[in-house]
Amino acid sequence: GAVVSQHPSRVICKSGTSVKIECRSLDFQATTMFWYRQFPKQSLMLMATSNEGSKATYEQGVEKDKFLINHASLTLSTLTVTSAHPEDSSFYICSASVGLATDTQYFGPGTRLTVL
Amino acid sequence: AQSVTQPDIHITVSEGASLELRCNYSYGATPYLFWYVQSPGQGLQLLLKYFSGDTLVQGIKGFEAEFKRSQSSFNLRKPSVHWSDAAEYFCAVGADSGGYQKVTFGTGTKLQVIP
Image (tube, rainbow over all chains, first blue to last red; front, top):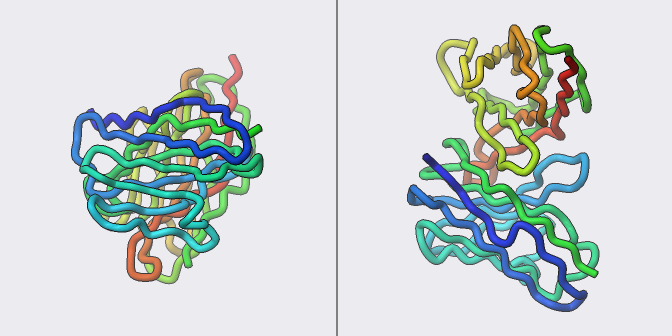
């Protein structure tokens, strides 16, 4: 149980376009969802924490207007990278929890974004 | 703010040998501590976690970790490594941060298992 999916797994886009990444909890209701960014040979960097029906809490240094997060239901959160640039190329990972961040987080397999 | 350090970027062990992955954390009080494993093409999976109680925590896949407050450490161990354990391992610390809870991950240790 406790499966989290991400779609798409890979996406290539042109500079200046927007890309939406979906994160779904398939068999449980996620009170909280998290979005991370992982650079090569580096750790997961938390970008934002989102609770269903409320605004996301962004980490310091993460541009809210560039990385739009929507948590419309207890099973779906989306991350939209607006006006993407090559420096936004990265591996984006979502996770979901039935409670807080310190409860078990169930991770999606990640989305590789490449901006040309 | 909390932080976590994994001093070993890459470790190679022989199949059947014992394993210890190091993790040191920084936080003023007792934090939540986690070990996650990331296999290629798969999402991170929780191996074990600690907050209170017995300082020796048993996890899945035969892993265990010991919380040592005096050393601010939470090292992961396995007595006999299997080839399928080859993966990247992340230590993480969770605590209150600015009014909400947040988990901070270490940089990871990549485990290679040789026959």
